[in-house]
Length: 267
Length: 363
Ligand SMILES: Nc1ncnc2c1ncn2[C@@H]1O[C@H](COP(=O)(O)OP(=O)(O)O)[C@@H](O)[C@H]1O
Ligand SMILES: [Mg+2]
Image (cartoon, helix red, strand yellow):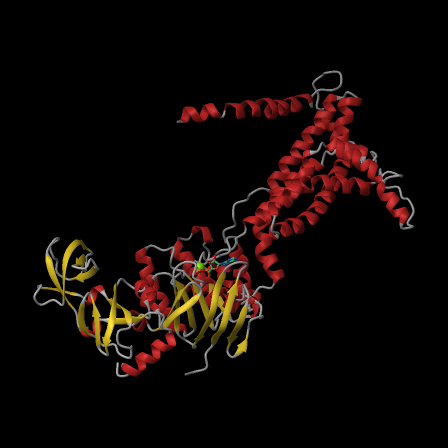
């Protein structure tokens, strides 16, 4: 029995080794070499001492926070509404559908929609508001990022709400709770795990959305993702790029730790 | 009779294509233990849900202390529920679960603590207040659910098959405890079960339900001794039911013989059904018996022998005997005239009650 189990886990272990462990080791390894291939701690020294990198980090975290907050604000009520509707599986599918389309394609679509002659501006002009610069603004960056991340937030929250036993809601009302009290004292605490999973799924990728910062945000916001891309593709400073990568990985672990399961408090 | 605390007046409940309740009419008095008894799907939970305010009657009137409450939201009713699946909040510990209702009412902290501990003590869970729900057994969870309801001092407590998930021994113990608790608190209990033994053991009054209707209401003894029809007789305990014919008042004919009975007020020659409870049948010699049967099987149940037998016409007779018989042996069955209970086809509860009153006023 044990043998059979070991056999079936081979693909998984291989995958893990090739695509998770090896890249991680490589990144950490690279981060200790400078541009001319000598072992050094300079990358980390530079990262920690230079205002630019720290500002970039703060920027990344700040925008990722904004995107996550906006996504959550839209997703929670949507997931709640979804769980109450009749054809929830169909609605859910419609929400998941856009995630099957390539990110770049969606970004280009938004360029068309937000551009000077795009549909949004034509709409505004039609109602006499005049054209506005929409593309290459921070707002458009946040909006598009939120749009792309929303399905990943809705899914875990929807699952959590859908698993709630209806009798718990009845019990809450039975004991005198108003709808709002039922939400805040029963529904929200019991769906918090879904929210945490959603925050993980959105916040971490949002730290490094280099494609969107460039195409939609017009590189006004430089996030860590952009910096990594620049270092690897433009300046060819793989060491510094890897250092920032390590910082991102540490951030991810920190987030997972913060939002992860914790032992239940015992009073 | 005191003013009823709850009434249902011609209440109907329809879902898209099913009629869950059809013309439900009853009154509950303050401080009594009532039971809704019926097979699964007969509408018991629906009655509780309408009373608790989780769903609305499609038609008819529901009153609480004389006030119509059809549209009063659940959180404003002085009624609490013990749910079939307990519905305890898994993110709160025992204390916070029980305190839930009081906290919402902004009861002072000190009072909450005192009342919660008191409620836990009354369900024999003193000392369990810091436990998580997942750390409790089924029986303990069920008692937390009861404590969570009674701590709010409701006027009426609704209990939806609260004992069905417990093992037989614990269930019997909890039946006694629930009954004692109800007497001590003096509040009205409306208890739901599909277990006739449970209903008979606990209730002041039983409503026997089938298919969205109340077939018969009465004390456990009334319902057991005088079932209104085949369904009730069969559902409440084991019984031998055979077709027969009324001969005259106090004379009934079945299995081709005529017997003295205690029923009257039924026109002569009317086709009827006769109920004989297995424990009223006494095994005796063929010569002394009123019926002669052959023993088919015999099962020892600890306190009695369960004997299945058949007569010459092929009718099955179930007998609960103190002494054992021999399989294949011919035996006599003896019973008293008052052990025969006559049921008319399609008699309503009112007609049935009126007839009983007229002819059996003395007992
Ligand atoms: N929400 C609902 N939608 C449709 N039919 C329902 C609903 N709730 C109950 N019913 C139907 O009403 C009938 C009575 O159900 P219920 O009161 O739960 O029965 P019981 O509690 O006696 O087992 C059943 O036939 C059930 O299928
Ligand atoms: Mg039910």
